[in-house]
Amino acid sequence: MNLSVVSFGYKYGIPRDADIVLDVRFLPNPNYVESLKKKTGLDSKVRKYVMSQPAATKFLEGFWRLARELLPQYIREGKSYLTIAIGCTGGKHRSVAITHLLAQKLKSSGYPVQEFHRDIRDDS
Image 1: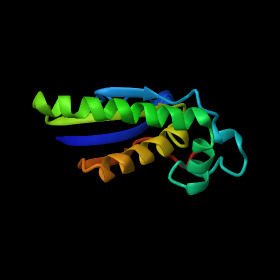
Image 2: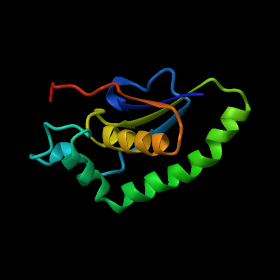
Image 3: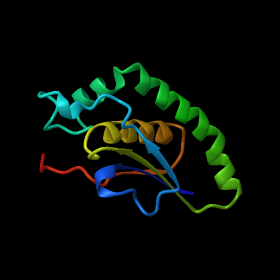
Image 4: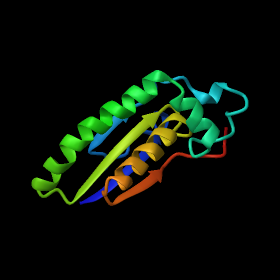
């Protein structure tokens, strides 16, 4: 199965090819932290900030438990492609950090995964 994990910003719309869509706008937004505003979720400082929130850890662990159950089911059904889309407001901080961490977890578990960050922009 070709597995893609993509981050996106809701203000730019949900990716059309998304099979599973997750919303992380419930997490505190690094955009409002001056030292993190111009960075992205690919920066370790932003990821550390996002993951310092207990809700972020709980969310990632919970989705990982679900994914371990669902992915083999999709494979058994013969699904060739699966796209997991993770969104926040602008697609620059929270969704990028969570997408990156989820992609790493999937890769370390033996899944071939591609990681995309659709809405990382330098316009903020």
